[in-house]
Length: 89
Image (tube, rainbow, N blue to C red; front, side, top):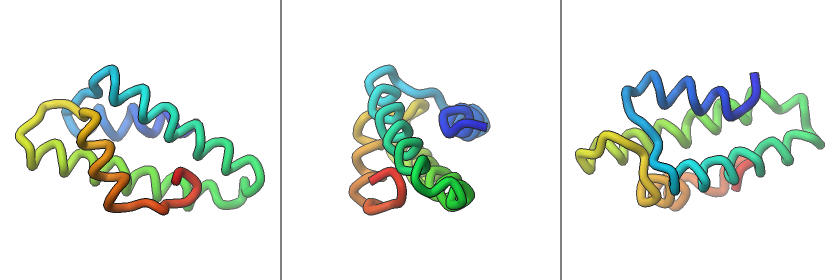
């Protein structure tokens, strides 16, 4: 399963959606992760766990703001709190 499919699955399971601008940020973030995995394919489980953690933080942030979608501010809040987070940032 590719990393973007994991994003889709987790976000759908949360009952939230992703705003288009936030989706662009997330796609770039995930692509960086996929690139980092090329050199370390044996660390895929770690990458999946870190991606799940990042998304959980975005979802929590979105809910705390009373939003029904992931927005750019939720992305940046998670990034500020969690990065550096291998292999994404």
